[in-house]
Amino acid sequence: MRYEINPNLEEYRDYILDIDEIFRRSSNIIYNKRNIIKNIAIDGSLWSVKSFAKPKHINRVIYRFFRKSKARRSYEYSIKISKFVPEPLGYIEFYNRGLSSSYFISKSFEYDFTIRDILFSDLDGEKIEILKEFAKFTFELHQEGIEHLDYSPGNILIKRGESGYIFKIVDINRMRFHNSLDLQQRAINFARVWLRDEDMEVIILEYAKIALYSYEEMLKFALYHSREHKYKANFKKRLKERIKDVKINSK
Image 1 (cartoon, helix red, strand yellow):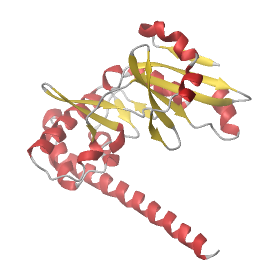
Image 2 (tube, helix red, strand yellow):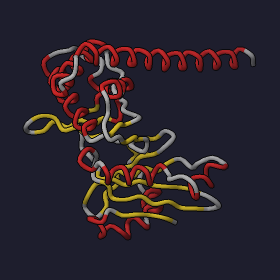
Image 3 (cartoon, helix red, strand yellow):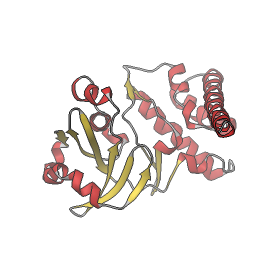
């Protein structure tokens, strides 16, 4: 077993050590695909506990001896970029001839919606305001040298605040850190958000104004990479459907 706890939250140590059993007992599932996320009340506070899928074969050994697990990276990155993410509590790994299970625990962020929820809504005044605030939030990330490699719709959480919108990012086990990002790197980072062209125009106009960049140049990169990402994703989807149909028809 290996674990680490946020130094500011040492009082939760016993809960971390018992998280395997606590997680099994909880039925409050909020996400259930390859990984599973549950919201669990611990000592009066609500925490999001993410159980990562058990690695396959040799990866179990790699994650034990040669590479940091996704849970550990999620925790360490959260500590590093704490103002942009829900408060991290800790991570824990369990071993049985290699990594068998791992958990990352963070404070549950009671968001109102994600970027995904507004992607296909009309470009009205409220949406424009959200997109502008999103541009400012992303600029702050980039100014800290942070590149979220899975900057996608479901990983951008938004809460309505008294004086605007509060943004947090999740699913951060894939990050890249830079001394600084150039214009093209910043533009490319919007590619996975799956924005419509008119939405991207609003975001880049606001971003370029703040960063003192050329709007036309940044928009060119942003639109190109956004369209390229959509094309590749849709192509993979069609290919999987075609393979599935072939298998069904061959039976």
